[in-house]
Amino acid sequence: MIRLAVRCSPDAAELVLAELLVLAPGGVEEEQGPGWVEYAIYGSPGELPELGSVEALAGEERIEVTSEEIPDDWADRWRDFHEPVLIADRVLVRPSWLEPGDGEDGLHVVVVDPGQAFGTGAHPTTRMSIELLADLADAGEARGTAVDLGTGSGVLAIAAAKLGWGPVLGVDSEEAAVEAARENAALNGVRIEVVRANLREEVPPLGETVIANLTAPLLTEVAAMIAAREDWVPRMLVCSGLLATQAGEVTAAFEQAHLRVRERRDSGDWSALAMERA
Image: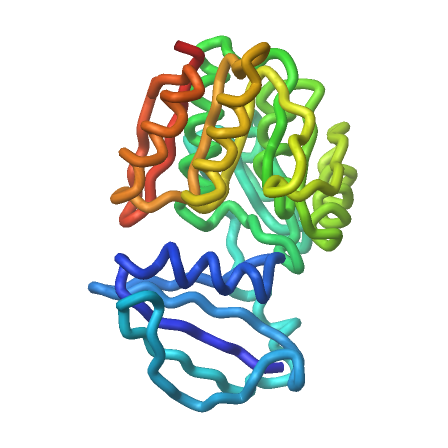
């Protein structure tokens, strides 16, 4: 197994993440430190290059790229690093190999196995999205159809279904993500339709609530897609995947689609927005 890692400044993170997701749309590992962000992807020898350690450019930013061979039993040992994540004091995300623990009564438990599809609940963008969904549910907004664009593992779609939305649709461009989301939905005992669609090429079915944990460029495309639908504006929208420095740009794009900010969350370099029909 080869681990390919790219370390960059927070300013270059969006560009680096977008490029790596082209190579590994199923998911990217992230670590952060003072003044740096590191993304890593995994693959078999031949799938990823063995580069050693090199420097490259992402736009005008200098980045560090390293690749190394890791032990063959990594696929088993990596499970040790995934712990249950309690979000907003009422949504617990945990992998299936962990037995239910004390204190789960009264919580919305979302069981998701990390794998070929992005989304375990540990990333700030996922956590903030679930926090915003939980806040909307508390305010009585968990009603009607919900569509999760770029559903990945299905974690946000499943959380939405557990919080009260329905019916729920998950949309992703990758077959591995579609399969993972369907499997995770069945594992959680919720009914979620999952379809494969490329947001850059076609307009997917859109619900009363739109959930979109995507990169900022894709979020602006979603905003343009909504703006072009003169006959329809979602009642609510929850989006994340954007850097805090991009929140103004993304907000302005959705304002053109007749949506306004209801709540904003920030965690480290990342932001999430809950928007409502203006």
